[in-house]
Length: 128
Image 1 (cartoon, one colour):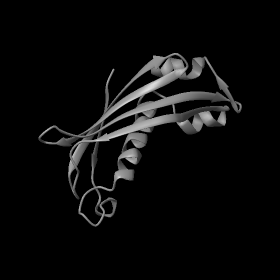
Image 2 (cartoon, one colour):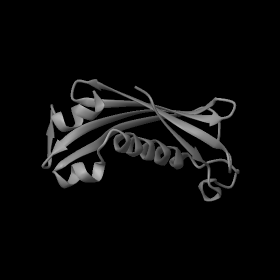
Image 3 (cartoon, helix red, strand yellow):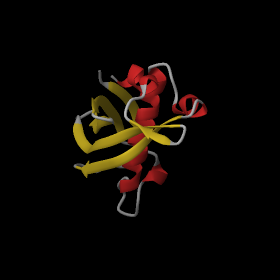
Image 4 (spheres, rainbow, N blue to C red):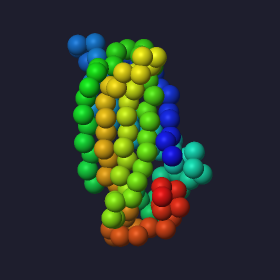
């Protein structure tokens, strides 16, 4: 399943060169992961209140084409399970030309009541 989230670059996200500052791409991918979970019927906040945290263990961003102020784009997210990790593959694609702006790979692990766990049925029900 691929989740898509439409977004638009805001002026303050750009740096002096007039392009989106590199750190904002990570914000875009995180927001898309949260929206994906909400669309599946849960939220990171609700899970946290139950002692379940999905924690970023590693993130790799590959920048391809810069986004500019007012550009519209879509974040396409897919997730798969690899061992104890939930691996999100996320593409940020400029619209309407479908130009790849950034590709992200985000490794998430489950922490339950402060301890890393190998299995988390509460997350599995949403991500696998």
